Image (tube, rainbow, N blue to C red; front, side, top):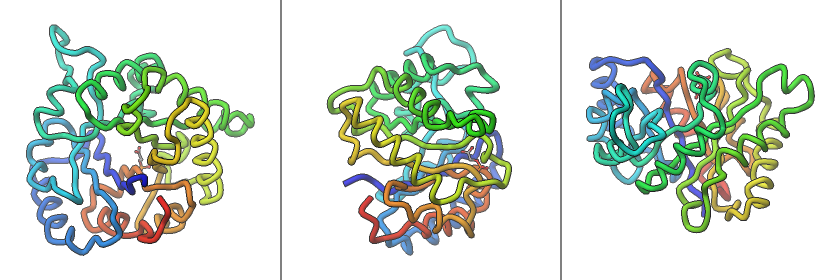
Length: 254
Ligand code: PGA
C-alpha cells in the first residue's frame, strides 16, 4: 500500500526562530494526526539538524536538493550521503525552481535520483508543465517526458524509494491551483507512465503541489491517485501545515 505524505518545502525561507516555533507546534499536534499521513519537513539544509528532533513514525525530515556527485571538490554542494548522515529520509529533486533558475535538466535530475537511491533515501521527483505548455495542450506529454527521463536510472526494488510530485509550474506560489479533476487526471496519467516503465505503479505515492492551502487541501487530496501534497508557502505556518496534513482522507486507498 502506498504511503500518504504531506511534505513542507520551506524553500529559502526560515530562521532559528521559525524552527523553534514550528518544532514546538508540530510536536504538540502530531499525536492528533490519525489519518496515517507522514509529515515531511524540508527546511533549508542548514536547519535540517534543528528539526531532526521531530523525526519519528509520523514525521520525517528531508533536504531540498543534493549534488549529482558523490563527494569531493564541489564547493557549496551537499551530498546525498551527508543528507542521510544528518538523519534525512527524503530529498526533493528537480523542483521547478531548480529547473528554471539553476538549469537543472532531466539528465541532472536522473543523476541526483541515482545518488539518492545509492544512499537509500526517498527521492521526491518534481515534475510539471508551464502555463504555455498547458495552453498548447502539451501538459501530459511534457510531464510524461520528465517522469521517463528523470527516472531513467531506477529499476527493481529502488522503485520503493521513488515519490513523484506533480506541480504545475503556473500554480506554484501564484495562488492558482489545478482543479481537483485536473490533478487527478494528471496523477492517473503519471501512474500509467510509471506502469509502462515497469514500476510497481500502484505502490508509488504521487503528491500534488502548487498553492495548496488549508482551505483547498481536502478537495485536492480527494482524488484516488492523489496520495498527498508538496506544500510551499503554507508549510511555513505551523498551524496551516498541520491542517493540511490533517486534510488527507484517512480511508483513502492510497
Ligand atoms: P506553493 O509551493 O505551495 O507556495 O505554491 C509549492 C512548491 O513549490 O513546492
